[in-house]
View 1 (tube, protein in one colour):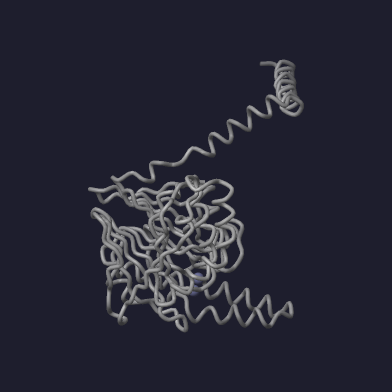
View 2 (cartoon, rainbow, N blue to C red):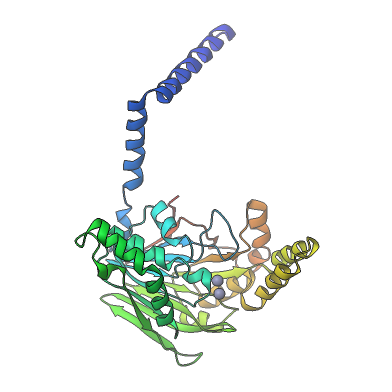
Length: 360
Ligand SMILES: [Zn+2]
Ligand SMILES: [Zn+2]
């Protein structure tokens, strides 16, 4: 093609694009058709998450109390056959699941690790969104002693809203029972005990104590389904029990806080004259595990894949991610993932495969 022909072709393409853009800008019927297509695409649920032939884990909140538009507060969804369990329900959890088109109507339980606000703040929205999606029975909420206070508080705070929803949409669509929470106190007697939380069909959930002192008790959980398994650290310092309970698990989801990054954040706050928040940031170092410690625990448990969640501070770019993972390579140079909202780990039944998908 000559230079003149090339420039003519470029001009023609630009004209077509401009004409198309003008049509979209001025034609209401074209705008409406485009919107209908986008909504149809967004509304289509990822029903494959309820595939009974796999244990599916969806990260709906990999953040912490530190704000980050890309990371909701702690929430991980476990799809096991017809069951859907949420491990923690932090702020933004329900919105993130909806954005990821992850179905919520079969939500059959919430497992709370402890009652820090970032782990429970989204419970009201989780109830409402799953109720609106078609869950009609009361929602069981499992957790340490104190869970009943939390569920009663949320029900009291959302009672008026629940009455409006039923009045507006009708008893058949949103029956009052769907707005209710049923607390189940899980008692784990000591630091070595492992307690069965629920056992239904081929699904088993166990709880154990971790060390998030002064938050006591604080729990981790293990979920087993048809030979596949995932273990959750909850919020904790490095804990031997995780290696024992998590032995041979396919997936370990471990919290992690980078001390050198958080100390830099504290120094920055101090320099800006915010001594109050600088001290709070420094205090967080005492009750979380480092990325390297989490990798050591994953190795001791012989898990196939380690995913960091509850990532503190939230790294905003690739350089910060590299800083966050400093030292991990030397301990574990394979099968380590920095979790993100939208990560889907699929564990097919009857195999040892671990597939990772991005639902964003
Ligand atoms: Zn937390
Ligand atoms: Zn916590």
